[in-house]
Image 1: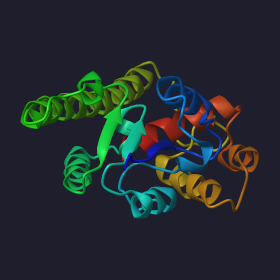
Image 2: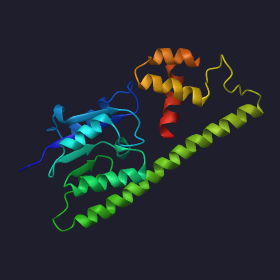
Image 3: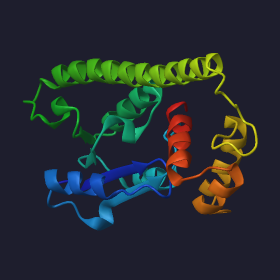
Image 4: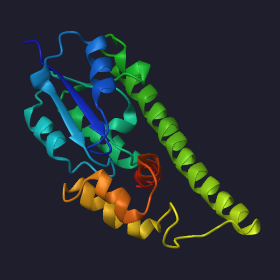
Length: 208
């Protein structure tokens, strides 16, 4: 019996649009039905996500799971490896569009070759993601140091466009919980635009 093709999509916040990922999955697999696409709008720091857990309960041996990019599955390299291993042991084929080897048709008896290549790619992509997060933190630190040297750094002083990260996280979590809107969050944080809010959100999410 032919299995079902499922799609999994994750965006980091409720305000981000999942359209790009949907188009990518349907472009690769036109037969993918809307009822089999599961979408989470939250951080990828762990796998305790409502829709992902619903998806896992529906998956059966012989099914295929499509994901656009590896980091849409999660951000923690070790947790991703464990999750991929669990799904494989259940007989579920995982295809990740930005990991070409996962899309290959491997002859029976040669599955070990695909596993070896994919394990290497997970290590490499995980390392690249971690390096990118480190670069962002380094650029932030260098920018603050330069601003201090030039006497332009104002830190979290009220009235500036930036807020202390601790304060930002508190407000950000209220937005994620639908307690306040992004517009209200911007006002609470003293930002001048949505861009400032989303830049801080990106920095916070990439640090998770």
